[in-house]
Image (cartoon, rainbow, N blue to C red; front, side, top):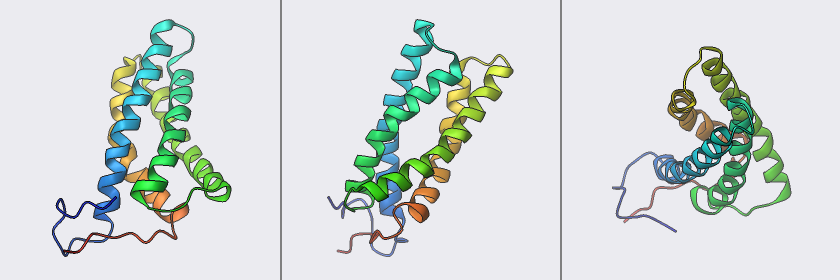
Length: 142
């Protein structure tokens, strides 16, 4: 789906896919947060373990949505393997942030907020260049 009215002509080509990536990211962050909160509040897992479970669920939704909407490419096993591999980098960063917060006795909400602030540009860059490198990224022209 193209979004021609939101972006004036002449913007860098990466703006539109990044905006879409961000919208999907907000949705996946909500999924991530709900699962994280449920697991932590239930007492079933530690903050970092809960975060990994939540990340994995949100990640599957992210692959499908970003393939179709942000980067407009077909889904496939090779691309998904690259997506998962690249996502593991995000898991490591995400886990490190949660471990750091946990070691400092931060409330998990604070650790999660730090994580949410860091990850969007890091993830977009990794995904763009390692997973969706064959995407015909565009900004719609009028």
